[in-house]
Image 1 (cartoon, one colour):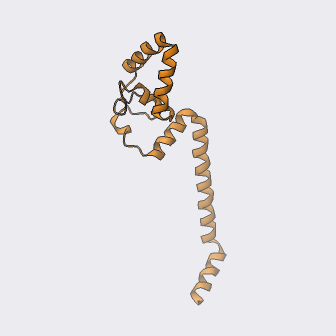
Image 2: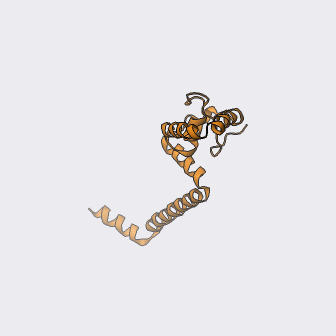
Length: 126
């Protein structure tokens, strides 16, 4: 099975019971405490639906792969953003690469222009 950062996984390591709420928290970026409280409050009204749904998700959803546990907070936040809006994330990455390309072009033009040579000669005179 291939590891995909954009899939929903049951998080049995950080979970209290079967890891469904921890998986939802990991997938959405919400604090796990808030997911658990929301589930408990909703289950007061929808007990006959949410309890079987919880067990169904725990049974059907794949377990979170071991290699996804070592992510730092910045990387986890990036992948949660990708899950929420993949087009926006791709646009942001493209914009960062365009900005980096523009900055590299500025550095290259500075060092290949006559001004840098003149600045170097002035520095050598000091």
